[in-house]
Image 1: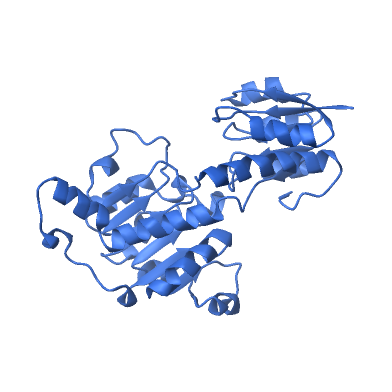
Image 2: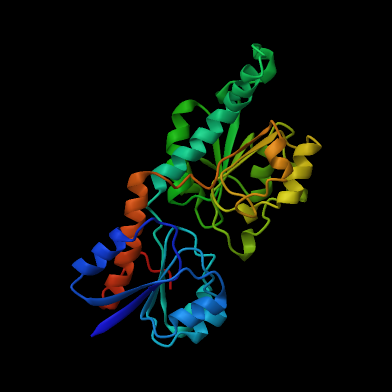
Length: 319
């Protein structure tokens, strides 16, 4: 039997890691490469596919209902906001992701953004390059043990982030309605409700998935409740933050700053005020990246498909 596997879209130079996984599987796989941007393009390409390998192309309810043979949709990455999970579940299609490939990288990047802001490294670097050799450009800086790092979410990545932050002396708090106070306490973290952590955090690091309930979770109302010295760190998904409200909060000094690896629209518009603020650090959705993480991501995404086609259970199934 020949299985048709469609990669809906990709930004890699080649697909050698995926092809190696499929070749070594022992299955007869026809690997079809596409660069779909729209629902219609996915529908046209995927109608007879047994499996979809997805990066950014939209896998909406309309797309899923058009699939004739698909047994599995595997997505590169942790987030599955490109895929309608309810529609896939209703049709009996397994959706799988790769939740652990970039755990070290993303937690390291969040830590780097935290430290850069806490010691104002980026600001001082820019000032020195302007000819201003004066520590007063970064006033005030406070000792870590007088500040609280709050974390939204308590999954793999934020737990690893907390492990790395803990030795630095920060007070630690987390919000996650699905994790017990005892579980957090065992990691040396105080459990807080959302409104409490919004009020108490000096640094608020975002690690929740983008779902209906977290869209614009951080908005004008929440910014107004934060400390004036508060800094938001986001290595999750851009739309978790209402970007227009964030810009206003930064312009009016309602909060002190932001360190963002993700933005509401990507790539960020060159006209965005965020690009012209000294109290904002932005990186180009790169937190996930290392050479090793990229290979792991691609191999595991392909293995999800092989396991399902072989009738095996993938540990990363979401539906």
